[in-house]
Length: 212
Figure 1 (cartoon, rainbow, N blue to C red):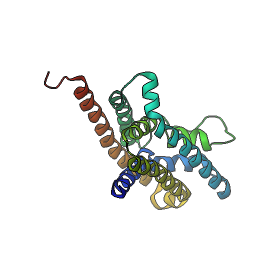
Figure 2: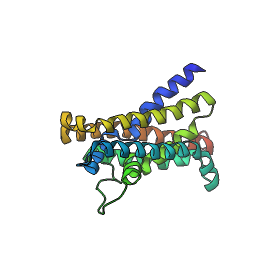
Figure 3: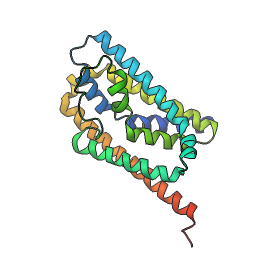
């Protein structure tokens, strides 16, 4: 049981960390908070991570309820969510940015922690779909516990990277962060392909097309 929990936790932490596109989030955070005092930046990071965590936990457990309410299967949602994630991966690979969060807000905001930092920079549409799918795939208690802890750990690591954003900018520069975002996009494209292929395979098997 512990081995199942631990393996699920490690794989989920890595998976969710890439889903959060951490280096793109760091780049956006730097641009959104440039010139702000360190204390205010720390407050923004804390509130953004809390908002993203609350939303992530709701999505993690909300998949089965949502699928049942709107009458779609997990396999169908896998195909749709995987396709959307693949489009995000392409955007990261080609330009180093998420396709749904490429610019800064045009108007001044009193609080950027929730919008746009938590949503859609940290948790965008493709990430929402992937969290719904991964949460619905986990069935027994050790897997669910490992997956949930992995999600929270991924957000914790992202929060640490945001706290270190000033050092990362000095060490890597905009070009270095952009390259790391592109590498994250390559990993996301593989994850997207796996989600789509799993959905297609499951849909074919459930429809009885194989061997018909």
